[in-house]
Every structure is written in structure tokens, then in C-alpha cells.
Image (cartoon, rainbow, N blue to C red; front, side, top):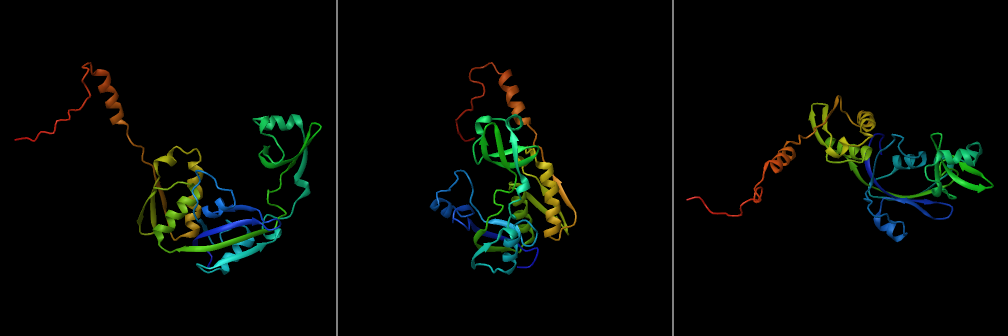
Length: 254
């Protein structure tokens, strides 16, 4: 695969040391391994080859892969999430930890905690002191990927639609081209997303790196609520008990 190629990839990610499934895009595998998440939509990963969106070892393998062929690879920590850095394992007193967490009942060995803007994992609790590992949860582990590239996206409009969905989590964008310029109408659901501004900033960068677009414009349409207002006004003004009930007579005009 050439750098910049946009692909759909189905994969299974395992801890290579004990065989535990860590993540998958395949619903059948998730059910088989008793890791199925209700409400989640299982679908192939959309990624740009060589864009640095994935760990180094996976990226390198994708660059040599072919569509439709199944691959089974093991990636060393050095090309995954790195070795464990002991300097990132810290002992914290109880007062500091309690100030950082909202719900003390959520604390247990293996729980994720955020302290001073850093995410870590609670690994030890004893005598009022806690040990938190700020390494990536998969640091120090060899990882096994079983994967298949199921599709290469060629169409320009489809590329943009795929990148929009993978970078925002939203779909139903309306995309229009004028030469190399693109106009994107933002779906209503995204208008109420508190991260919308950051998403749009990221999308512009991704689209320019992965496609040949020039100017990127976002259109936000805030629908008027006139109909609802008129209905409320009508209900307040109407005193007739039968007011607001439509006649169900379908007589034809003669």
C-alpha cells in the first residue's frame, strides 16, 4: 500500500504473551471471545496508510499488505507502545488521589485514574498510599494482530465521507465540490457536540494530508423552530374542546 492510501481494515488484536483478545472490529469474534459490547457498531477501521495513526509495527505491515489477504503478525514493544518506563510509576498519598477522583468508590486495582491531566492505572493500594502507573496500558507488551484489508477507497467523495466519519464519529455530512474546493454541511447532531470545533480543526488537517482538496468550508444549518412556536401559540389561543382535532372526512369535491 502506498502512503496516503485510505483503507478499511478488519482486525483482531491480542496480547501475544497470553493470547487474550484486547480489541476487534469483528462482532462475531467479540461474541466468540465473550467481549461483545452491546450498543457498539462493529465495522472495519478506516485509516490512512503511513499517516502515523497506528502503532509503528502495524503501519509497516500495512504498507506491504494486499487487499483481501489475511495477515497474522506479532509486534515487539519497541514498535508498539514501548517498554515500561519505571519513572512513570509513581506512589501517591491518599489525600492527593482523593482530590483527583470524583468517586472514591470507583477506585480498585486496575482502575483508570486521571491525576494532573495524566491518565494512569491504579496498581497498588496499601496503608494509605497508592501506586499509579502512567505508562500506556499496553506498554511492555508484544501484540499480535490478525488483519485483512477489506477495501481500498478510490472515489474522492467516498474518501472524504470516510475520513469525516472516522475523525468525528458522526455521519450524514453533505459534501459538495467546486473544483478542488469542498463544502461540508455539518449534521445536526454534531452542532451540539462540545468537541465540534476541535473536530473540524482536525478534519481540515486530515483532509489536506490525505486528499487533493484545496479550500475546506463548513456549513452549519440551524433549523428554525417556527412550526413548534406556532403550534404552541395555537394551543394557547384555542378554547374550543374540539379545536386542534383534524376532521377525518375524506369526501371528494364535486
